[in-house]
Amino acid sequence: MAREIEHKYLIKNALWRQGVMDTPYRQGYLSIDPERSVRVRVCGGNAFLAVKGISEGPARDEFEYPGPVAGAGHIPEIAGNFHWKIAEAEIEDEGQEIVKPGWVSGNVTGDPRYFNVDLLRHPYSEWAQRGK
Image (cartoon, rainbow, N blue to C red; front, side):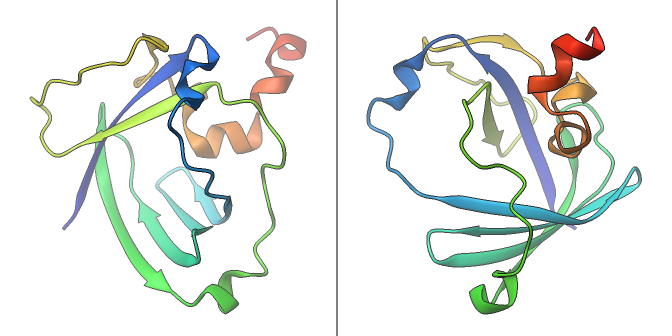
């Protein structure tokens, strides 16, 4: 069984752009069930299918499988041109220290509003309208 341990942080300025390679990503969800999500992602000429369980703090079960790009080419794009609001740091051990760059601010790891599946249902751009 694979475990994903991930922390999420808000981005406070555009300094994250320095030294970043431009790799287009497309992703969509085949299931957004609260018990598990199933995501298809295409990035850098590769495709992946990921099955993710319920988050337990920063950790959750995750199974990721490579797949054919041609088969993933029909996924609906859920994000077009957008501004980054969240940075994710994936670590190997829950006790591992994360050295945060100066361009991140608050840790939003435990806030379900920042889960990718919840952002699909309630995009950040709509939060002011909804009173979040």
